[in-house]
Image 1: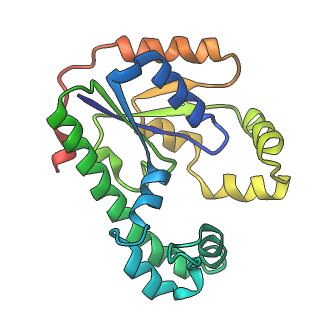
Image 2: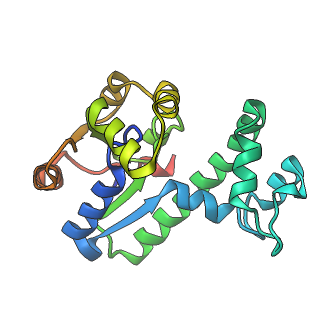
Length: 209
């Protein structure tokens, strides 16, 4: 089983690439979205719940006792120091969750490709888990247009997000494969097929470290 991390800047089209990979590989691949894993470990009774409530108070809870995403986000983004504390709780838990999923897929022995999609793969050290990192690239102009049209983001909000993310040079320096997702999906699919068909030597067991 090959473990591949998929990363890239906001608006590059990572979700579309994951959809294409599912289409191309069907039941031969397993896809894990880091944001979804984070929501899982934040649920009541799970890894992070008690520590997050203790840190942020019961103000972030909904009537059913679960963490309310809106209240959680509002409190989180109003305080950079709090954000760092939350990340120190959630990020290690997400990694543990991912490692358990990798182990489960290996035990079942049905999956050839295990894909992890996350914007912060490089910053969070996923090179120690993945056999390869793939960078989904789109030009700044295309990304801005997508974010404006699909999410309704203002230019100021887009500027702020871009300033907080890795540069193209950093992505390219850390990733072994670049998928250009700048226009026609048929071209993106062609690049994915090429990446999937190339042999890059024996697979590592880096995820165990």
